[in-house]
Amino acid sequence: MSGAARAYWLTEPRVGEIRPVVLPPAGPGDVVVRTVCSAISRGTETLVFGGRVPESQYAAMRAPFQEGDFPGPVKYGYLSVGVVEEGPAHLLGRLVCCLYPHQTRYVVPADAVVPVPDGIPPERAVLAGTVETAVNALWDAAPLVGDRVAVVGAGMVGCCVAHLLSGIPGVRTTLVDVDESRATVAGALGVDFALAAEAGGWGPGAHDLVVHTSATSAGLQLSLDLMADEGEVVELSWYGDLEVSLALGGSFHSRRLSIRASQVGAVSRARRSRRTHADRLALALDLLHDPAFDALVTGRSTFDELPEVMARLSDGSLPAICQIITYDQG
Image 1 (cartoon, rainbow, N blue to C red):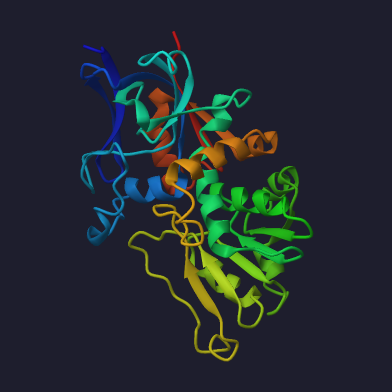
Image 2 (cartoon, rainbow, N blue to C red):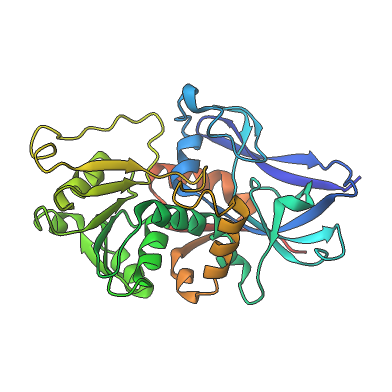
């Protein structure tokens, strides 16, 4: 036996608990990972917490090591960093990333973990999946040198997209949000900031590219309003079962605007023939050598607090961008 562990389960919509787990024996091709920290993917995980995954998307939304089924009981999550306690010699003692739910220890195939490069702390490494999403989005969006870009929505994904855009020569990036406190984070990421109400007065044609991540109808409408004629809004938001309302009867057609979905489940078509999922994740981890990403970690709580934390993130009373979950290392 590889021992005992504890895991967070959503027992039913809006009700979570910590459950004991008996780990299976580790086989010759497996690793046993002791979790150091995990992160909550706020947009997706709060939709799962609220039971808002449409039945038609149950299969598409399964996490790699999910147990149970939507709407619950289900063990869900995919941003985990830990230390390999048992496994092949080249991984033993290494800090690794894994797309695993919130659990104190776990057993997975050795090829399901990716070593974290030296110099990247665990609390930054948990952003690998989010940075990977941002990389895929920029492969889809294909920004050009000198572009004027707006990122509407300053959550985890929006902040990562904005920061990656800031590294492209001549690109002027503005992070747009309804929360003025996000201006501090934007500054740390090296991009401009504007309140949504202010950006709404800029008028059409102000941006060569707009990336939307706020998961609100108002945010998507603003994104269209900011877009230059014949431009394309890249949509990263996932709305679950929420309906989206847009005013498409005005200048949407005359300005020949487009909305394009971007989703991390498949490598962008622009790179699919030349990059694998593993290549994309390796790139995301390499990008995390940049300490500017630490600005996204704005909340910390313990594993035992996770049921309460998920409820507070869902109802909006906990306003963290990235909420880190820490584990007892005793």
